[in-house]
Amino acid sequence: FTKSPHDLVLATHGRGLWILDNLEALEQWQPEMADAAFHLFPASQGIEWLDFGGRHIGPAPGDFTTPNPPSGPVIAYSLAKAISVPKGCAKTTGKQPSKSTKHEGKKKAHKPPFKACNPVTITITDGTGKTVASFRGPGKAGINDVSWNMHYAGIGKLPKSMRANWGHDSHEPDGPLALPGTYHAVVAANGHSDKVMLQVASDPRVDTPMATQRAAFDTGMRLRGEAAAMVAVIGRTHDMMDTLDKLLASTSGGAAAGSAKAGLHASAVALKQQLATFAANLYDPHVQYKVPEDDLHYLTPYGMSFLGLYRQASHMGPDQAPNASQQQYIAKKEAKLQPVLDDFNGPLRHAVESFNTEARRAGEKPLPVGEPVKVGDPKLLASD
Image 1: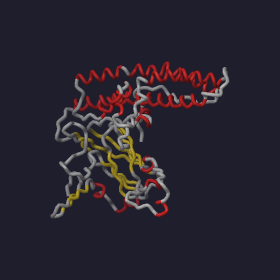
Image 2: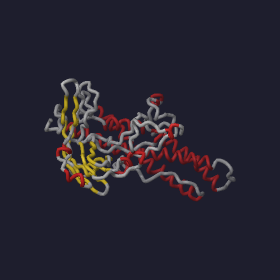
Image 3: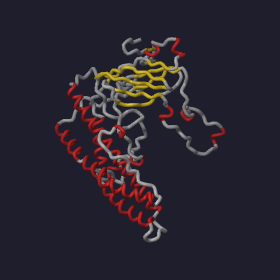
Image 4: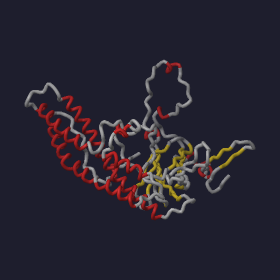
């Protein structure tokens, strides 16, 4: 038993080796806790391990293929009773299909959303009380645990047709890596909640100056706010184009000349041209973004290029502050953002609002322009 990380190591005289990591919850377990509706245990320390490239990963002990323990703080809590979740949340891996289901064809079973299957909410805050990230945890009876990956909340998502399909949809925060220091986690489960302190430490093998870590963090956080605004503009422009295409299809024929429907169709044609001109600077409709590397066949428009810059910056290790040339490149990209927002919130928005007034008079669905997009708006960040 290793006391400091609270791990239990078991080995045989042969080649068997088992490591049960972070047993602190079991160490503190008392019989009366079994009847407590909710109990929160102290959290383990998180360490921001680095690999040789400087990118943040978990510990990597040579060629072992067994999963490593999470590098972030592990938050453990116990529940006297399981929190009810949809039936589809139950694991079915390894179960053989019953006779009644073998001949039902290939109908895909409905999978409940991750949020519904993980009903416990964990909210991370910094030393000033500002929200860093929020995510979900399981609600099983007994001891549950979940780890914070030490990242801030990321940005909102692009429309589904524009998301790269890498076969993995993470529900963890994917914003910039947090600075070492003290944080807190508020765990809320079925009407009960409690707070626990979290400690995040630097990789003990590397002595990275705090000024360097701060520079990397500040760059990532600044770009996060700007990239969140860009995603909102791209998403709303895409959705307005989609809604406009449907409206054009529904008003393309049968309208008498001079009628409100014919007039709306003409207005829709003009607005589509204005939207297409604006969107050309943001994304390429010819690119299949869900197909890996399809974008290599085309020049990347500014909007998607800016999001690529943010993805790189948000995954910088704490020892990877941008150098002078990188700072100049980032500044050039950032300088082009405000004109895009000014156009979207100004002339384009006015044109859409005018069209929406006409569409409502004709009994048609208005375009989803939303509120003006502003850098730093917390509503544009990813949520759990």
